[in-house]
Image (cartoon, rainbow, N blue to C red):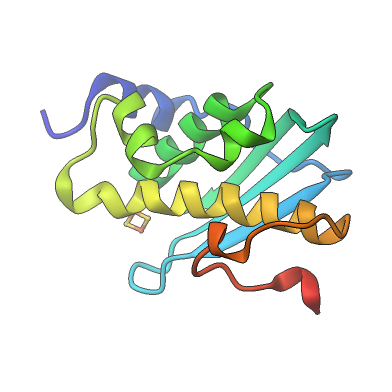
Length: 140
Ligand code: FES
């Protein structure tokens, strides 16, 4: 079978879908090629993700990746969130087909964009190199 059971499970029953109206950080990223869009909302307290929600307009692998990514960062300290990689997300899903790996990249980028937004909003210092390719939306 092309997709693992975990991918199918997270695609059919995605966890943490929705919006956090009072989010402390919001990240939205898109894949120019397929046109899929992912948005992540973070609630942060004492350097820990206390709540997270996502909205994904995209393929099944993108939905499964964002669902898994939210599960992996919920309740976790920001250092751990920063260390999240698309590889780890794909691994936690028991793998993605090679041509679908880029969908998990969207999840990593959306989480990092939300984290960067949190840092920007609170004028917290960070190394811009930790957020390669993520535009500075908080600056506008
Ligand atoms: Fe666009 Fe999967 S095909 S994110």
